[in-house]
Length: 218
Ligand code: AP5
Ligand code: ZN
Image 1 (tube, helix red, strand yellow):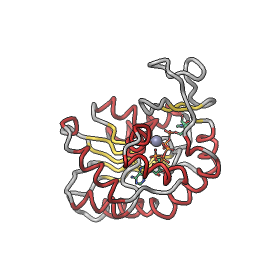
Image 2: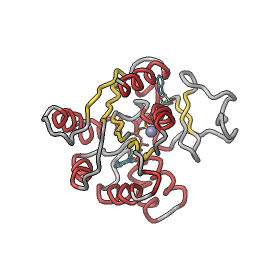
Image 3: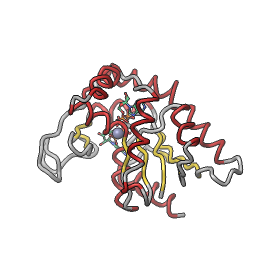
Image 4: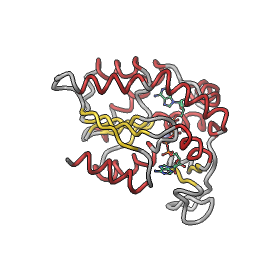
């Protein structure tokens, strides 16, 4: 299984990725998680990326494409992969196409902007794993602690309301064009084109999970 999860910030890509990678036993390639790990380790890439991420902008295509190219070389990608938060621009999607990276599905999770602000403002994350919770909609078993490790949960630096509004604008301008890019490719009759599935992202975590898994099995 090779797929892309596409959707605005806070749509639930990371939340749903966890179920899909478990179901199909594939790695989750989240460029956001990879960048946050680089920021934490204070690598040159991390230091450069932090400023852009805190402002809600996009890290340069060249850096991201290099990061993903290296990640795909690793042995665990042989049986498939799930891209979460990548590609995010037309040049990133073109880079995948030019490298003949095969894809079975593009899944778009559609959530209206008002719900996104509410989802992101209540988000708490476990930095080491990227697992995310919500204080109201998806609470951890023990308040403020990760279910699996018991370690502290934090709020992401880019989850302030101002940065989230900026991230939503950046999504509309730079990432949303990929909806057309992939849906028209899917309809073009090209045998290499991934199938395009749009999932209604309003509903409980469990409902969205079932919608996605049913669509992937049919
Ligand atoms: P990234 O980490 O990819 O952030 P994002 O795309 O903005 O998405 P989020 O992680 O905020 O949301 P999500 O869809 O994963 O939602 P989640 O499941 O957590 O990128 C961060 C930054 O890195 C970017 O801004 C950019 O600077 C840089 N970057 C990353 N990739 C890049 C790239 N390819 N190119 C350039 N720059 C790049 O859910 C959100 C909340 O809602 C949680 O609290 C969750 O519990 C809750 N929730 C989930 N589902 C539901 C539900 N059904 N009902 C109610 N609540 C729900
Ligand atoms: Zn995420």
